Amino acid sequence: MAQYYSFDVCVEPNDLDELLAECITEDGFVGYNETSDGEKIKIKFFYDNIDVANDIQSTMTEKYSAVSQVCEEENRDWNEEWRKTMQPVKITDNIWVSPKWLEPQMASGEHWIKIEPQMAFGTGHHETTRIAAKLISGHSSEKSLLDIGTGSGVLAFVAQLAGYKSIMGLEIDETCRDNLQENLADNKGRADIRFVIGSTEKIGDSARFDTVVMNMIRSESMPLLRAVCRMLSQDGILLWSGILVEERDIVVAEAHNCGFTLTDEIVENEWWGGKFTIKK
Image (cartoon, rainbow, N blue to C red; front, top):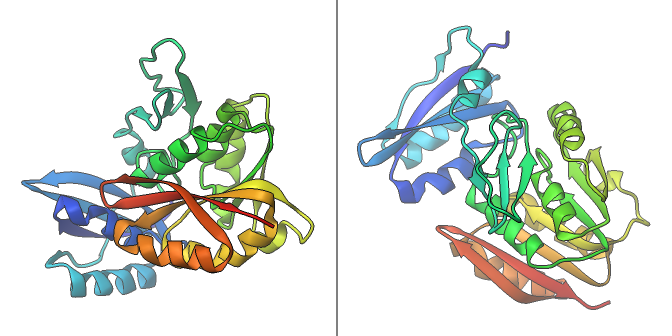
């Protein structure tokens, strides 16, 4: 069983999303548990690399007053512990997400995306996922879509329900591979869905998509903007989530510099997402 290292951070609810964005990394991050601590929220972060845990804990100590020391966790299956806290979540007006062993109480006309939960991958519980899902659902299409940073594949399955026929999910994290294939088997539909592990270079220069989705924090998504521009077909659409409200003007300006026009936007708590079009 893997050895984990953890530390706790207590924050005000308004600081939670920024904290998660800062502590969830591609290198060494395993997951987190969330509990109430009076009027504050306590987050326990888990890493499988002690150096990564120490570096992030040190950075958080400079920003937040209540940060514990890094400690070595006892030999338990923390992913299984986290699974026990799962609840179904409604990410659009008619789409639920939950594990297949936790069926939601659905009304007529509602849909269920079955996601086997892993702490490091998306399960639909974060505002940014809901924003991206609403942007996708609000743009029904029979064309192609690329989901960059697909994680568990949630947004690819939302796109399938929205009518997209050809869908690719791109994920740089190799550890997502098995989880993606399991989720794909549980969410078979009419779309041709495939998942690719690697960077945008893995797609190839000739690939073109009618819609590209990016649900990633600004530091990860904005450097990909020009590559996205090249991958979009004529009159293509970019759906961009994972952006803090305070960063909205920065990303809109950068998108404009690349030839995009903002046509719609959604805000939920501290997070923002937008729909952009491009003319070629």
